[in-house]
Amino acid sequence: MPVTPMNNRKLIWSEGKVVPVVSIILFIVIIWYGFSVVLNAPWEYDKAKRSSITLSKVELISNTWSQKRPKLPTPHQVTKEIWDTTVNKKVTSKRSLVYHGLITFYETIYGFVFGTCLGILLAIGIVYNRATAMSVMPWIITSQTIPILAIAPMIVVALGSAGFSGLMPIAIISMYLSFFPVVVGMVKGLKSPDQLEIDQMKTWSASKFQVLHKLRAPRSMPYFFTSLKLGMAASLVGAIVGELPSGGGGGLGFRMLSGSTFGNTLHIWSGLFSAAILAGTLIAIIGVIQKIVLKRMSLEM
Amino acid sequence: MYFWAAIIFWILAWLVNIWISHQKESRLLSLFPPVLFGVSIIFIWESCVVTFNVSPVILPPPSAIYVKFMSSIPILWEDFVQTAIKGALSGYLIGCVAAFIVSLIADKFNFLERGLLPIGNFLAAMPIIGIAPILVMWYGYGWQSKAAVVAVMVFFPILVNTVQGLKMSDQIHRDLMQTYNASYLQTMMKLRLSTAMPFIFNGLKICTTLALIGAIVAEFFGSPIRGMGFRISTEAPRFALDMVWAEITVAAMAGSLFYGGVVLLEKWITFWHPSQRGKT
Figure 1 (cartoon, each protein chain N blue to C red):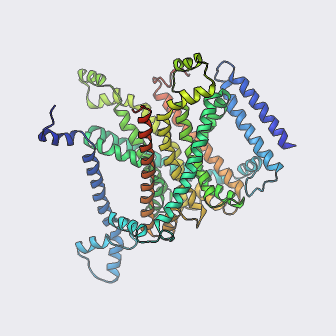
Figure 2 (figure 1 turned 45 degrees about the vertical axis):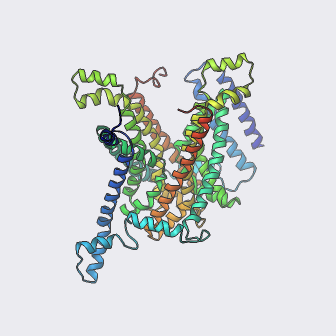
């Protein structure tokens, strides 16, 4: 069907994603502004009552959108807070979101790298050794039904008293969360070549290592990248929660906790959004690498 | 002495596992390797703590945890009810029902689906746990705020999985339903929900763990004087690690029970699916 301007416009409504996504985001933003009026109004009424002035509707709304410590800050307040604390503050300052974001970033990356290595090793063990598969696999699954984040404070405290402090304890928590998607994905990926191909390798008298290196590993790449994305997201959650009990160390989780302790909602919201931006960026980077690698391997799906 | 005994036990257990792995597959035998592996880990843990004189502040031995566990069952039960039942389970149910309803609506309106799916996918990968402090501030320190955190956390994974699952029925089957003059409800119940079930259960299973994590972590931001998260965050700084580990044992059991329950439900509902057939 030729795309004329007429049915091109129709196309936007019946296919494509941009228009629906943007309109839903707009819808959310409008609701958000509405809710911040509703949630922040009682405080304004209270204030007006105490100084015995009556507020007009317009005053009320504009006041609720510019409180210093609102119950629900508006999107523009959050944006301004993020802008102020990233661009207008020195990076080394403890008030800078970049400072906290970098701490969380390092924890996430360390945990992610360790977790990925551990996950790959375990997956190779599981694929190549039946005894490992039978005895370890159920425990790996059980390990994830344990809300491991609950242990986070304890790991931080225990490792702290054993002389490890700073990034390491939190990276370990991130690792614990991020290895699981990698194991599951890689076991699936390494097992994805079918029997015919493995037999073919055998007729070439390929060693076990060669089968892994030349057949199983390349075949597992699509699974690998999908697991990496999941692992990265899990790792960031681990880092943020790990920071909660560490106290004073800094990081986005710490920033949110201190915001919650002192009732500074803007800090919570800006921390939350920076965490989301960080997660989105990291996952997008993996996505780009995935595209390039899979294209070069002509495995693109 | 203890240490070497544990190591020898471990090696023996491993040999048994290797022997079992060469036997013909059977349900009973396949239970042994994980159990042996777990028991040998506990043995090694205990013996390491005893041999190397590890301070109980860093790692208490399993025996001490067991003693503490048995002696504080009433407290643990109270915490379990507060966090797992009131917080996690009710939030899980609310979140699942809400996500299910929204995905039915999204499925009905194509425009909404195309908008919601990318946003849902994006948000499912976000550290949603970060809203915990905000919701605790809004809904107070009681279990309601924990349920709210859990509901938001489980919402997006279930939404994404359900919407995807609802698309799984073949066009030819839907056409067949139409030739039968089936109503929307009939098509849903008899065809589309059934084919969606494996996907929905995938989401439900992922979310069991998320629910417990959400409820526990939300308690770090404020809670009444009971609850698993509260207990952990107050006992850990006092170095009462045996209590913390007892609480973790409860969490592990609750998590496994929760997960197991959903798996049983899945077996019962999707008995027809290839992944369930053949392993009775």
